[in-house]
Image 1 (cartoon, rainbow, N blue to C red):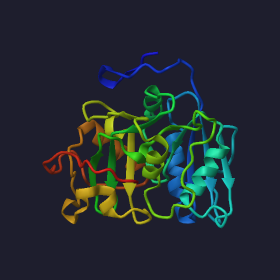
Image 2: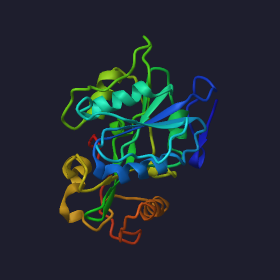
Image 3: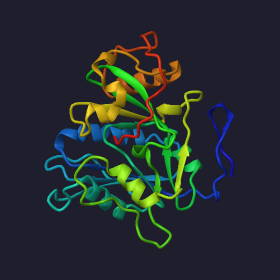
Image 4: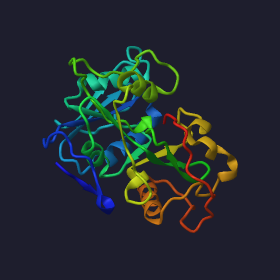
Length: 281
């Protein structure tokens, strides 16, 4: 089965032409992040991939994410004492998922409507799939950049729910520090079991397949999130080259999310290639 992406970019032929069920999992532990989670779910619901569901595991004490549940969209309220870490919460979501493939959704990310389609197009049995680029936005400093890593960005991982021995691919439930996605990939898919989908700026959606927002409630430091673009000197600028169509898309996403940016295509662009540090979002 061959798929052709934007700009006539061919995707690898998948191993079969079936349409596996994919489960998008989202976890949340704080009431103040509920609105972020609702926005992330809304963007994921626009996916063009024809067979997916959403599983939400919610340890927030007061509020739920969904107003109503459907067969393909469920929310599980859990005790934060029993599920104290993001790894434990994600493992609960993986256990409740029905899909053959899992895509973790961060509550402060936006997924382009073709994201799931293009990542599933290059899937391989026993391998995870990561994007090589991601657009990142600093809401506080009004700065945008493309974050890139040719080895793949762990925060964009799509993976098979089960291993070949029929056990689940799970996170470290006891991990307290940031970096759970990187640790997960290294532990479960080391040794060449990673497919990286190059998303260059020469075709759309490209890096805008995934947009990550930095804000006051973010768990990561600005330095780990943006690498060398974390410096205050980049405030109010496009810190790396972002094509006009990508920029217009980012602006439309921010407008729909109720965010404001004065940075536009005509702003000064800082010379230099995108940062190539691997970070966890």
